[in-house]
Length: 74
Image (tube, rainbow, N blue to C red; front, side):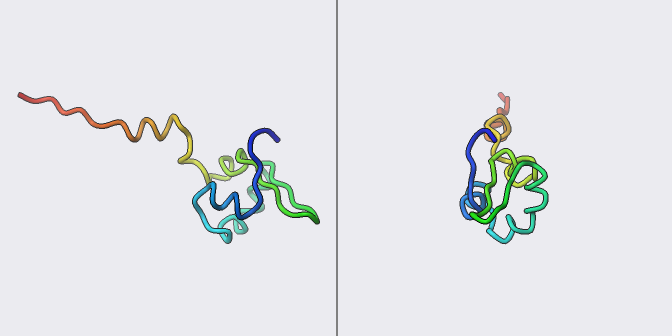
């Protein structure tokens, strides 16, 4: 796992969703690298992206969306 790794609460905060949303998507998160054992759940940020829970966090997408529109006129 590369990059930040979160527990359930931290992952929910990072993705802007509730803890229950993280738990509902846990199987998908695990398919993308999250792990669960007796010490807790570890969710890499890449798993949040892979599960579609952090898709709006890409700097390329956000910078593209926030660019002001230019209107020409005389």
